[in-house]
Amino acid sequence: GLKCRLFTMALAWVLPGQAAPTASIRHAPNAQTAGGVASACTAGDRSEVCGRAGGFPSAAFLAAAAAGTGLLRRSTQHYRHRRTTGRARGTAVKVVCHASRQPRVAVVGAGPGGLATALALRKEAGLDDVTVFERAPALKPAVGGGVQLHAGCALLEGLGVDLRPWRNPLRRIRSRAVDGSELLQLDLEALAKKFSPFTDSIVLPDGELASCTVMRDALLDSMVRALPEGSVRFGRRLDAVELSANGESATCCFDGEASPLEFDLVVAADGICSSARRAVTGEEEDQDPRYTGLRIQYGVREAGGRPEGCEDEAHQWFGEGVYSLTATYGGLGGKRYEMIAVIFRDERPTSENTDWDTTEVREACLKRLTDAGFGREV
Image 1 (cartoon, one colour):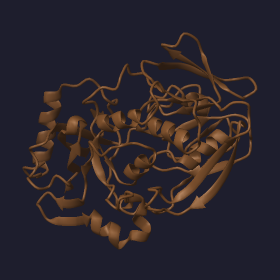
Image 2: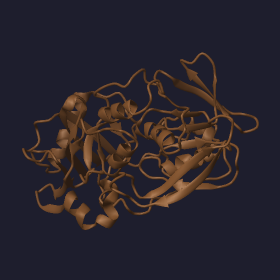
Image 3: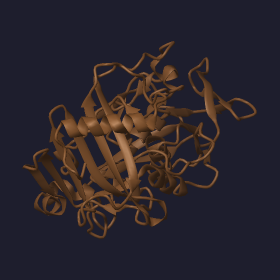
Image 4: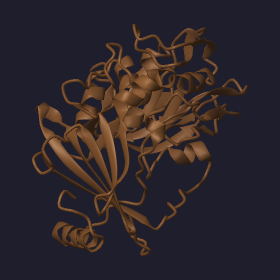
């Protein structure tokens, strides 16, 4: 579909050891992460708690959110990466229950952010009563494009997610102008070895580079399999969420559930049209997304169209006003797919994922690429 956001590839992927932004929860219940990956409705303890927030919600941040309910107390210890454990450098959070029961947690949205949240709360915070609610009736194959993972792959493996049957190794990133001139070439394995003090987080316990590409449906399938059976409920659209009068809990009304459900912690991970975000931000209505003037188009096909021998390479191409990325991705059943992402400027605001004719959009995309001088591979 059409996306109103810019996809970038940065050297920071190769050097993920830099300090991540710090997110704070202050004066719950109104709190959310700095990156917007997940927002937490919490109540109880009013003291400030902090954690790290990155591409996936960090265990430290999520456990801190759980501690904010007042049902938990939090103790932290710092540790350094050890390849024998496969854990990334950061903050270890141990949550100890001091109430008669563990808190009930609802995660709204079964995308990568929501599922990673549920996995981290279970494994890192030691919470057992964590349920993910997803409005779609089931995980559908062939939905969405490809995902590139670096430190995220190692983190997911530490949470019990096995991507090895599907993932496609990513070893090099080549950046070129449309005339074929080389702009940048990154050998990820060589960089990981050269800067090993900073790149432990992208190396798996067996010493293999974690960097890989995988189709979104295969990623979600693997994450759901890592959760206990029945902990992800499909066909559950969130209709309303309200905090209790004393701020100690939140009540969620889901389409598909017979009655409202009460939780001690609610995580909003239900995307750009989030139903839960209003309860976190306190806004009566969601603000419309601000159009950036940049548009991205994805195209996916079965493998076989890219040059032979570049399956473990991502290719970036830069043209006048147009950028493209091509790569090979691992998919369900061991299949390989190829995806292209094309980013261009379009000053005409159009709502996301509007109804459009595939043939018309493809022809317009081909003309745009041809006019900008892109080569045959693209």
